[in-house]
Image (tube, rainbow, N blue to C red; front, side, top):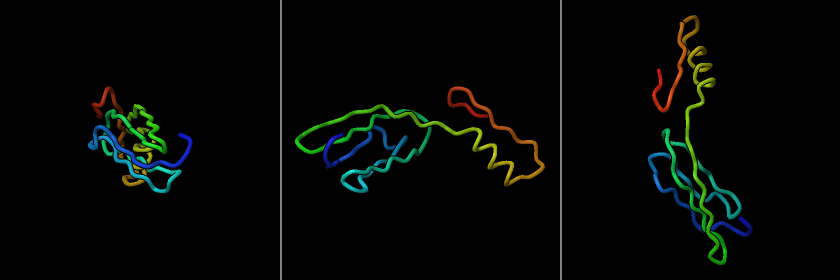
Length: 84
């Protein structure tokens, strides 16, 4: 978006949170798996809307589990928001 960001919002705050950090920077944090819309308002009434999908990074999760539980046989896999 050209120009400074004036305001931001997400349609579903259970999925993601967003805030303006600087006029040219926003922080978007995933809160839960799912999808939501990100809306950004800029100077002069410009509006941009983007669909955001939040998912679990399974390789990173498995690496962390192996680090926390060395020697344990733990492997998380998933399919359409169901994780085993």
